[in-house]
Length: 329
Image (cartoon, rainbow, N blue to C red; front, side, top):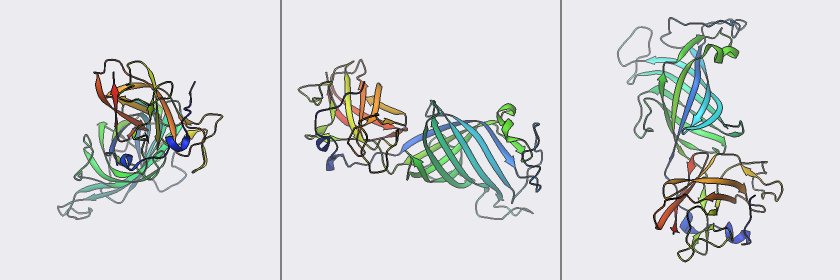
């Protein structure tokens, strides 16, 4: 059961100027399976989605044709997840060499695409949505490592990803499947498809931030006394960290409203805590009753850390905050 501190909410959830740092971008890697591109190869709306059989498109257009892309999100940063990857594309086929029927340009671009990634937890709870768009051409400088194609701009998001910006790329880890728009998309998982790995370099509008009290990080022992040099953290003990920017909860609250006392508002997104670079067991992550954008995360200290100091970092929805330093015994 989550316990709460007797420290005042005002003390816990007033940040100091020293904590107003901006974290480095977070890289989010989305794995997609059953990825199918449905090519708009028929002008008859009654034929779209009507064929229950597997279809094959053998001749691809050079330019000026649209397609819709569908796939299942199966993991994010190696953690099981669910959701929908949806994209719309328009074939451009731009080339630097004069070619009949293809646009002449100073760059080579195959398509222009818009993507939508609606991410759910492994249990099916909504986390948020990320939107991006751009040409499927050469990667621009600063692209996420691992991407091989696409210079997509991240244009925003919802849920915990509200207001995100950044850039994205992708790589086809297994050849995709191109189907006719006449194929019934309800049988996409039956017919199967390809795989995609999407690399997102995220600059969040908000991010987890461990707060200060008395000039020290608000990381406390079970008796809610702060971890200090005189009272260091011990391997195996349960600590609490108090932070802001953890995102939406279940049940939700109105923007700007305080969290309720009952029922407790559980953070919707996957929450991670690392100590000295080692993953800690997260026991609970909830909105602190009566606080606005204030959260309490209970975790167990990892074993085997060397004595001295260690950095603690909190992440929500794979977006990490600025680390703080505590003393470890």
